[in-house]
Length: 113
Image (cartoon, rainbow, N blue to C red; front, side, top):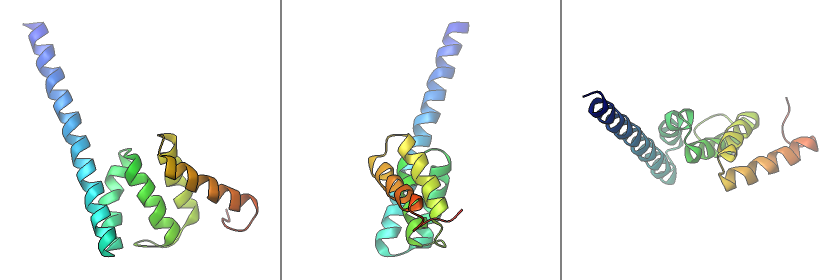
């Protein structure tokens, strides 16, 4: 009985994990759709929770929003933070954007701490 109970708990846990990932992807897609319509505030709202939960795509998109000042006030340091989080998970575009911001920061042309 104990082994069967453990298997049931494992299956329920896996289902919850997959359901959460699917919901995060749905929010990320909804944010991308809103961005495409020019509804930047809604896009940022859709991306925030998945980004906080570790969704690299949502983190990248929030970096874009903060870099461009769409839906939020331009904040290049916050953009860099989101790019770093996404890049740490292997998001190539985020790594590229992170590198660009760091390059300009080093030259003193872009980010002020």
